[in-house]
Length: 548
Image 1 (cartoon, rainbow, N blue to C red):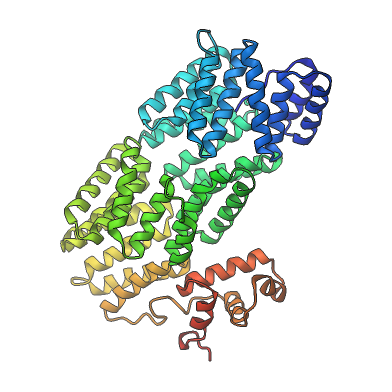
Image 2: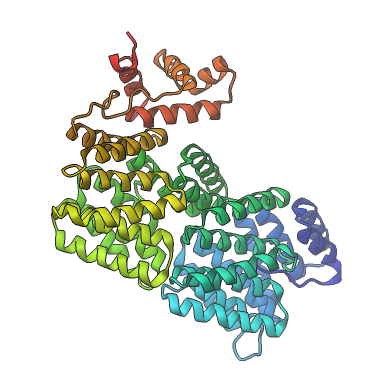
């Protein structure tokens, strides 16, 4: 998150760091250390090793450099390096060590007019759970950055403040800051690749939180190119996880699986503790696909992370334990106070869980909070969630006349955002509301929902849509699990799977990559609504597939 100040003997290493030539930078700093053991050389070597994937060695060397900088009274660079070490421990889930290092960085800058305090401010912002405090700290960092001319700090603080404003529901102000940060970042004002990558991740997260999928996708593509050009692979894992959330929302589930698989592999190789968000995203996708056993396995032992708790709550709703889901969601809701986006992600499933427990008043209260967030924030995806929740509560109370308007408004919001699963859920609520008064219209809505769910491979939603159509007196043909939806290629893969072939065997037979074979198998499991290959082979032999 910082650019080391170097003596002339390490100047070449610094130039190579800025050019993202990590191995050459490593060699230059090692040569510098051989002639003179300076903190600049240790600092630069630590950063080069971190980018090369030697994470622990990189942290140790930069920690040693911090000690030397602090002893020498070089407060700016000591504070910046200390903050970097602190954040590495935070990412690794070692919050006590992270707080300790942040305190050390703070002490190194105490009693001086030290510009390094700007970096301390942004790190305190990232530690803070109070969104107003986070914004104040980011603004303070921007003031220091502009006074000192630290472009790295200014761009990073801008991106952090923009993200915070979006999360607080101040959409217009937040996105204006994000655009400013993106313009500065792409103009080459940031010298340090690590700082630039983290700023990019803030930008993508802000666009995703705002439901601005087009901008998020555009920025993700830019970050992909940036990461590949620079070899900043450890940081790319975080951005890929955020990108996967965009892909899931837009119905591109196979691509989302690929992004998450990449992110999880990257985290496993570099900083395993950073993989919690990716595992939670993959688990939520598995729940949507009806693959509950796999979701359970992904979440085992990870209940301490907020994202994992939310994913586990969705799993508990799906497996018929909504009371547990309520407890899990209420556990994380308090920590989201003031964060409109995060609160929405908790309140939406909380409405569903409370309805499933029969507590209609509590569900109504949660839906009301969503409505307030939608009105205050002006974020379209929040409005869609709020309208959908209102429609769900109205259905549960038997007030079908009160379902149509919020369901239509939810449908309009999600259609505008390009979110096919949510569009289908809105259509299904409309179908329930129209059953008695306009059965033909209800069938049209339910058929459209069923088609969307089948295309996605959303097995649980397929069941729900098929049930509504059966109530309307219409057979769904393929049964509740959408067994007739396989593509020609998926039919080929299923036939080989029935013969007991592994993914490698399927790949060799069909002349495709093993990864592609795995994605075909995953899609087949989702479409058939089964948990594993053995169940797929049995279901695939059933009469609905036309096999013997």
